[in-house]
Image (cartoon, rainbow, N blue to C red; front, side):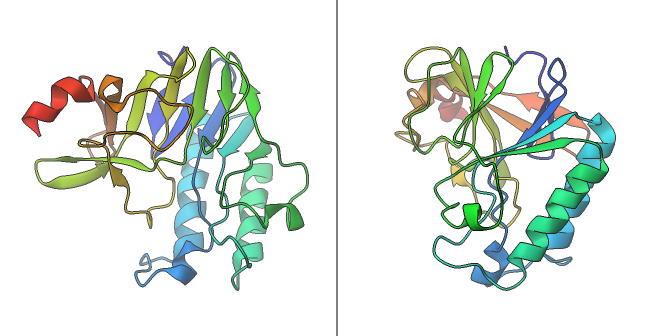
Length: 225
């Protein structure tokens, strides 16, 4: 189900469906943060999104929730960032699909056609903060998984059992302003769609070395961390 997935820069590409999936973009987080990326949030997101679009040339781009960051207002510049995000996808000839996350309470005022879930072949894309329909697999965000290896905290993907059966792929937060939640000692994963954390295998993408590193399940890996 996820065997053919290609992991790149906190996103996942499904070749058979020609679909790129990312989650937790959190546009506007820089306004709520004391630390800002050197290029600024918008430039960083658009540059990285553009690189993914150029590499994979997808027919569809799915944001699995939390495209926005603020719950109750739209910070200055967020609408412009969202429009630039839309344009970048459209200019690449792809269709944009956005599933609503728990942070996206203001999203419907800016974007038409958002959905709660979206099918990507056998897999159901959703944010993961609430229960979703039955599926053989789920691709979701919300958890912001990360893992500390040799003293360095890295964003990671998680592969493991869905709570009601089937399998799940958890994406790291696409925004680099999210610190990430270290799952190496987690007693639970904060999604009703996910089974026990010990059964999940972390996958770490080393962009500098152009390697995708797959690790044993957390229940086995914890002894070495």
